[in-house]
Amino acid sequence: MIYVHRNWETVPEEIKAALRQAAAELDALADLDQRKDYINANRNKWAAVRAYLSGMSHGKCWYSEAREAVSRYQVDHFRPHGRSKQAAKEYNEGYSWLAFDIENFRLAGVLCNTVNQEFSEDSVGKGDWFPLVDPARRATLQNRNTTQETPVLLDPTDPDDPYKLWFDEDGNIAPDPEMLPEQRAAVEEAIICLGLRQSRLNERRRAVLRRATRAAMRFKEASRVPAGERTVRDTANLNEARAELLAMSAPTAEFAAAVRCLLVAYGLRQLVRTDELAPLAMAHDQV
Image (cartoon, rainbow, N blue to C red; front, top):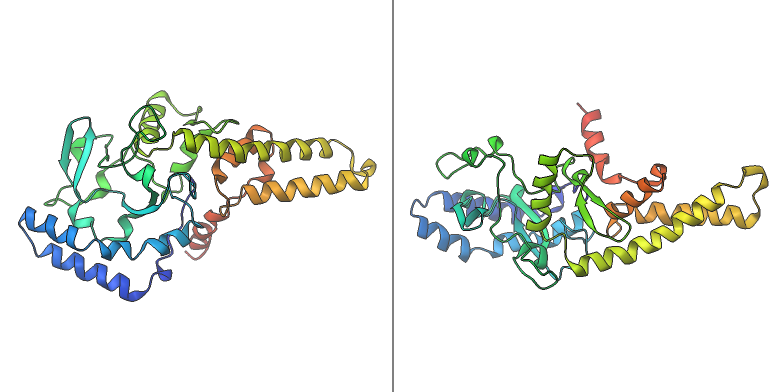
């Protein structure tokens, strides 16, 4: 997972207008069954945003950074519009008023977005999961203020959340080892709920990291040779490995977060690219 900058200017105005109209029509309905029927009948409104969400993440699932390892993409409601699951067999009212709120949309591969055991012995995937650190602060249809909530799930639109994850050289995912134990427990729960630990995902990440490892070793070997003593081949190896690693850690690359962790582990922080954070810096400069 890396930060995803949402540029709503890429979404045509007619699609956004249709979402706003659907939200207003939904808001006029008080009966819960009618609200549910209306949402289900208007799924095409949020499906129309899918291609634009994909463009914002360079064609990757927002949660896993995979392109094909988690199957086709769906528009996920970060806060579920139906029911909301806090724990096993513990459900709460969903966030129906956010069903057509474009800010609530994320792009997710189906094996991250739905509960399944296709590539895992345990059930993984988001489904209705939306646990909160303090369930008493959960927003409701009557009190819609979500700013008091602290979600357990990691959000790719929060620039701090992706850095709570760590990947080893085999592609395995875990909470950042430098976090406090209680924080790691929450991130571990998020990993399961978001389907980030699946054998197929691990295999795909492992293949990318093997390539990155070879490039990192070439870079380190060539960089050990003093500049004045490098052969033409040494310089070529250094430049080629640098270019390869910079490309693999770019936000356009699949599993960039895993590659970045490997670069940090190899002492090559200078090759970590975080271009996706540039819009945040630009917004700060304009203040």
